[in-house]
Image 1 (cartoon, helix red, strand yellow):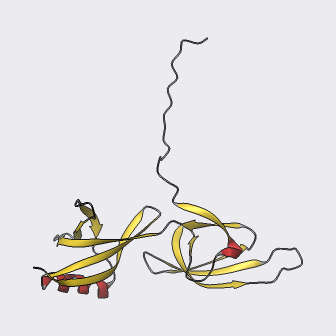
Image 2 (cartoon, one colour):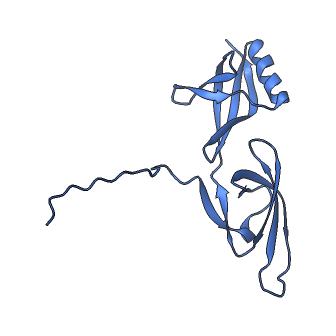
Image 3 (cartoon, one colour):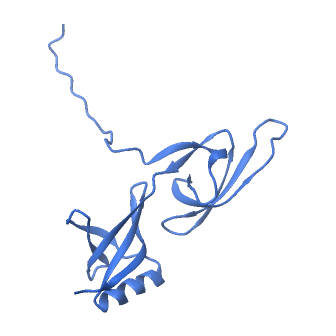
Length: 160
């Protein structure tokens, strides 16, 4: 028996995985896929026939859900692809700070202050105009692979 103490330096993340595997042939249009380490919404899928050496291939065209860039990938249909866990959450907008951050109210009554205003000019002007007019606004925040961004806006009427 050893009297030595063992010290382990843990660098592992206890959180859930950012992606899960799914067979390439099972991924459909309007689903999600990871292309070049970016979470993408699939806009086009085409499958080639099996060739002389066996594998049918899937050609994916996806749009990055955070920056809107178009990405492509070709994967054998029997292989697994990474699919990101994508969550959409609605928060009520409380305040917009001068440095471009928003203050949001979560369902349990806490505030969330770590999100920037969206880069999309149309959505940005809708949020600023609605907030300036004193409307009650609810923003939808999309999160995937450790990133979050405001992706939609709902007007729930004027403040009381």
